[in-house]
Image 1 (cartoon, rainbow, N blue to C red):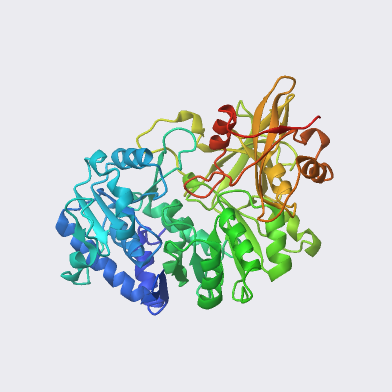
Image 2: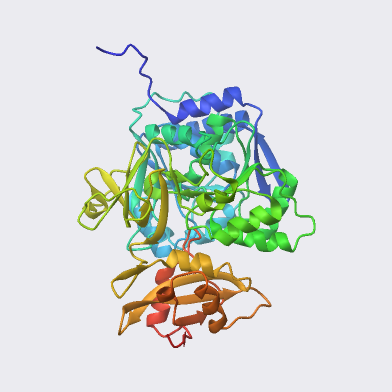
Length: 539
């Protein structure tokens, strides 16, 4: 028996039409050095139509890659709409990559057009002679540097076009957006999202069992729009009627605290390193006001327990931990306590990586692929599948990352019967000491609960007796002091005795990746080159 339901494709253009109609007066707010610029959903949508017409006049065809090299701002959102809706492919470039990686990605993706913010022109100019596929560069904002050669001014480009561009009917499985991994091991790999996967991911983000974005929300979008499409929030906003605050380059603790006080978001999305800096700035601000917020969403790295407790105890603010990766679009799990759980157990659920969201499946396996028990105790590698999970990389064969239709995440931990994931480490970061695993994530989280510690990163280093042991790299808070003996004693009351590090080093800052995660490969290299001043305690 056949269904008689209508079979319309799931397209990003329909998300935009929905938002433009139902939520026409909702605001997009872009923070600038001169104040806040406002535009409505309707105005942004119509400007996107003019951009699409202009790009078509320049020769952009279906399937062509149009890259963006931009901050979080209204113009970037216009490109988010115009490029995929016209049938081309939006490729968001990471502005924090090294020039060699940036040039590699542009060449690998075969980008033909780039839209760049004028403040970022000098960065793009470093690779201009290494990206022969790029035919046209469009600059948003005045640029008189000449560093990129012949360019087109964004506003001049669209001003002669009329709104009313007719979005084509596309195959819902056609490519809409490209995003590359951060390249923590080897070259970055490209993940291509379809219209269908983006649509379904946007729907999942509106669920109360996940992020729950809705018409009542105003979202401060701190996570970069080049980082997994700002975790999908830009498209979800048009689907749900959620207003957006775009902070551009103002990503330090002090301006973020000010934005929250003055622009009154109800939710904000960012990585833990950002929220740690917000906590620091908030403690120095007599006018701090987080009362508009219903929650903060943190993702991209494990959220320390002490951070969740600090926002709760000092500001009455819930912190939601989300888990995902470029390959998962990224929403895959969210750490919301289950209904009926005792209030005193709330923190136990929030420190977990998250509870798998409807639409994706997760399992844990051992090294040979055997599926392990979901008992909250057995440790294995997380594998995941679902309609917004990638099944391959763009132009790269990497069979080791996929097994029987499942994506191997590289995250190690436990899964319980309630669907909660606890991630103890990455496969490349796990410390194997005497045949047993030590969780660098748990050591870091526990160490950052010490009042003198601002950040802590733990890496594996060689050990003659145990093969590997942990080295704890500590960043102290300004004006604070602590000795390795004191910090080790603090850990001794909280973790297994055999986990306690013998090796300690104090550093000025933990190196960060281009998306704000701890960059442990840099610390490992510094250790092997003898650049870290390591203090070794007796076991």
